[in-house]
Image 1: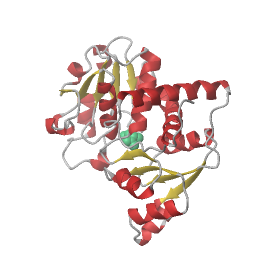
Image 2: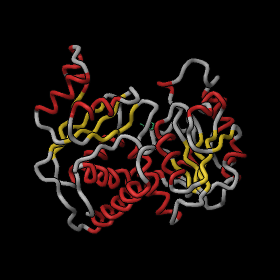
Image 3: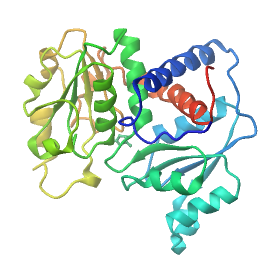
Amino acid sequence: MSRNLIAIRTLENDEINHLISLGADFKSRIRAGEAVPRLDRKVIGMLFFENSTRTRVSFEQAAFYLGMRSSNFSTSSSSMTKGETLKDTILTLRYERLDGLVMRHRASGAPVLAARHFGGPVLNAGDGQHEHPTQALADALTIIESKGKIEGLTVAIVGDVEHSRVARSNAWLLDKLGADVRLVGPKTLIPTRTARLPGTFYYDLEEGIDQADVIITLRLQKERMKEGMVSSAGEYASMYQVNSESLRFAKRDCIVMHPGPINRGIELDDYTADGSHSVIHHQIENGVFVRMAAIYHCFGGGEA
Ligand code: ASP
C-alpha cells in the first residue's frame, strides 16, 4: 500500500517509531556495506520549488541507496515559467509515469494538493511554515543515538519558531514521544497560543535552556518575515545566540542541533557549532537514512 508523508502532526506514534528504527536499521546496513531492500525500476521526482542543499541531496542519496532513479525537476527551467499551474505540473508528472514525488514548496499545504492530483506517494520536503517531517525524523534519530531515548528529556527549540517548519515538526514529534518541549525566542517570533503547538513558551534564553538535555537552534527565516520582527540580527544574537556563555545554563552533557543552513555568529557561535556539544553532522548524515526509511515506507515497504 502506498502512503504519503505530509506531516508529523497526523502520524501515530507507532508509525513515527517505525520510521526512526527503520532509519537506524538502514544506517547500520549501509555503513556495514550490507544489502538493503531495493525499489528497482521505480522513479521518484524531486520537485524543489524552494532552494535546498541538505534535504535535496539526501533524498537523492536515499533514492540511490534504494536502487531507484530520481528525476530532478528544476522550476526555473520548467514550463512553470510559462505559466503552467502546480496542478497541471503534477498531472504531467503523473502521466509521465513517475512513481512518487518528493516536494518542497513555499506554500504551506502544497504537498497535500500534489498528493490529491498525483495518486502515488508524495513526501513533503518542507512546505512553507507548516512542516518538514523528515528533518524531525533525522533529529529524533540523532537524539536517540546521543541520549538513548526521547521520553523524559527536556528539549529547548530556540529561535524563529513562528516561521520554522522544522520547529513545528520537531515540537509535534518530541511531544508525542514524551519529551518536555520548550519553545524559546522573542515574542515576535513565537506563535500565539491559538497556533496550538505543543510545548511551553519561554521568552528568555537562559530560562528556556535551563537544564536542557537538547537544544535545537533554528535559522532566522528572513525570507518569511515581515519587516520589524527583529530589530537587527545583532540584537537577536545578543539575546538568543547559543554560545559558550549561554550554554552554561543547559546540562553539562547537553547536545546542540541546527537543521542548517546556519547563520554563523547569529544563531550559534563557532565554538558551539563546531564544538563537542554539536551533533549537527550527525543530523545531516541521519537525514539520508531516515529519508530512505520514509521513501521505503511510503512505497509500501514493511520491515526492511
Ligand atoms: N533547511 C530547513 C528548512 O528547509 C531549515 C531552514 O531552512 O532554516 O526548513
